Amino acid sequence: MTDSPARLLNLLSLLQTPREWPGSELADRLSVSPRTIRRDIDRLRDLGYPVEATKGAIGGYRLVAGTAMPPLLLDDEEAVAIAVGLRAGAGHAIEGVDEASVRALAKLEQVLPARLRHRVSTLQNATLPLTRGDGATVAPSTLTALAGAVTGRERLRFAYRAADGAETKRLVEPYRLVSTGWRWYLVAYDLGREDWRVFRVDRVTDPLATGARFTPRELPEGDEAAYLMRSMTRALGEELELDVTFEAPAETVAGRLPAHLAPVATGPDTCRLRARVTDSVNWLAIRLALTDVPFKVQAPDSLRTHLHHLTTRLTASLT
Image 1: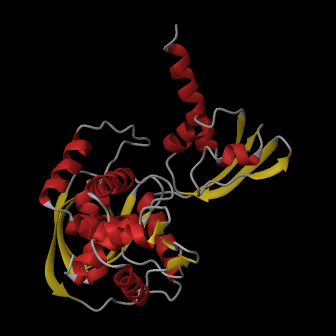
Image 2 (image 1 turned 180 degrees about the vertical axis):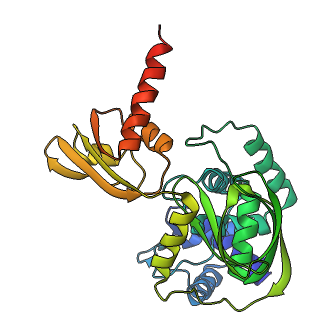
């Protein structure tokens, strides 16, 4: 193999298999001399790939963890698997999946060949996800379009459906995508309203990047985290003071709740969850029930009432 760039890519693909490769085997695979392999290994190191060499009569090479993340080479099956996983996580806002997942999906889908995009779509369309909360889902293509506009600082047009069903057209400067663990929101400066807005992404349709670049505006208040929290609170609705006790170890309960609901141990087999939340009482009731451990709601009263009504309806359905 005389084409040096092609040979380097093939060498890198082999090294990304988690094993140690003898230099002689690499030379045979690529039809070059061991000396050429040594030179190519040095080139990969210069490009930032941490290739470790072992000493000995035969000697070997393997790719190890470094201080930075170098580009990866993926075969067709690996690329499809990652794209499907990212789509599933992004589309349903699974806990722990945030804007970074959407950016990764946007980058991957941008370079996927048409045949692989078709395979991803086919598998996605044939899969029935089990959703939670109010069942609101987001098309991954919508998320990737928004993420691309945020990253590229590009003005964005889209249609938006308000809570009352009213349809409007918006032109915005997208600032940040925010995941609450069960919904996605877009924080943006609305040029038509000349003010900041928070949009539920599952109500956004037909997003279109205009190509017009912009310089990001400063948020009205210096504390970005505090402003975003207040914006999200207004968008989500009333903030609740949640206080729940569980008859189970804290680690058990924490493993069955979203990351933003973290109980604290009050004993070896008991724990307590106290938090300010903006989740709906219906969603909270379902999540607490899914912990499958005994619990008691101290507050808020609205959640206690909802649980009472839910229990009454479920009991009636059994008679």
